[in-house]
Length: 244
Image (cartoon, rainbow, N blue to C red):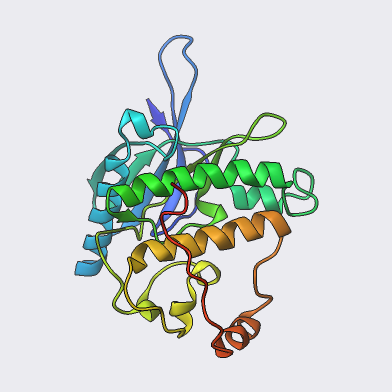
């Protein structure tokens, strides 16, 4: 028996709600998250949904279980696609950082941030080795499996705008969360050559860890960001393979 009794929240491409599954006998009720995406008929949306499903099930292999949110299946219902996946009661890292009691300073100690960084890099390494890029890495897409006083365990989720084997020809057309998008999205010219689709993830990784360590973004607002980029300072050369 299935009953939905919990409110939803906005995910990358649709509404996510929690579904309760009642089991026979004394077995406990199980919970799962279900993303509900309304179909618009636009070819680009169909492409994005296919990419999300492909990425989710690609990384649902047992050897990747500790890195990514695991899907349970998907189905069409009317004008909606429903994608069922793991649900974590502890929520996401952004909510933890914003919690006034769990994280009163809005930031984490260096050793905790280091543990989270290592887990993110493990997940990105797997994605990049399989020719995928996430493109929307941020604390809100890092689901918490375990938190202090226990060691941190997080999983990467929301593949709604992930890409497979696609170089970026127009950075300003990228979808994603504005603060975590790379400088090229804001008009800064990238260096020539290289796999810029991976670079998007590496910029978002750096921004995420900066946020985790300091409790704030790298720039106070859009004006400060654009002022920094307008100085045309040379960008550092950092290999996307640095996490190997």
